[in-house]
Length: 190
Image 1 (cartoon, rainbow, N blue to C red):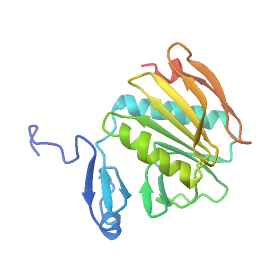
Image 2 (cartoon, rainbow, N blue to C red):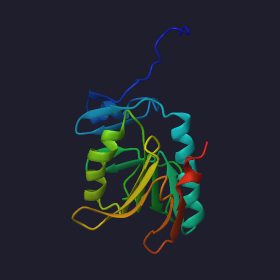
Image 3 (tube, one colour):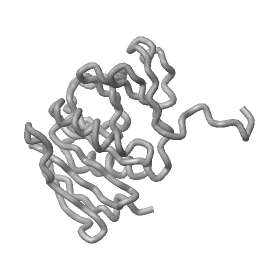
C-alpha cells in the first residue's frame, strides 16, 4: 500500500449486512461487532481514547475485588449479538484465556465515547446492556470532559454519578465488590 492509499479500515462506523458465519470468519482486525444481521465495523481508536480506556481499567482493577476480571475490548455474546465493550468487568474464577466471545453478563461495562461510535454507545448499547442485566454502565465523554455512571434498576438506568470539570470527583459502590473513587481530571489528563 502506498502512503497515499486509503487505509484498509473505515474512517467512521459502517454497517455491513452479513450472516453470523461470515462475521465469525472475518479477520481479527478491524474491530467489528455483530448486531441483527450486520457487522458494525469501527475505525481504530485514537490514542487519547486508548489512554483513557487504560486509565479507567487500571482504576477499576485497583479498586475492585481481586477475583474480578477487568477486560479491555472483551468480546461478549448476548441474545445473538456480539459486542466489544471498551471495558467489561466479569466475575472470574472460571476464566479461560482463550475465550473470544464470553457468554457471561458483565457486572459493569465502560464505553469511552468516540465521535464515530457515540450514538451507538449512548442509544443502542445502553438499551442492550440494561436489558441483558449489566449492573452498571459507565460512559466517559472525552470531548465534553464528563463521566456518568448508571445503575440498572430493572426498568432502566438510574444515575449514580455525574462528573465534569466543575465537579470532578466522586465515588461509586460496585455491588459487593468494592468502591471506586473517581478523579475525572486524573483520568483525562494528557
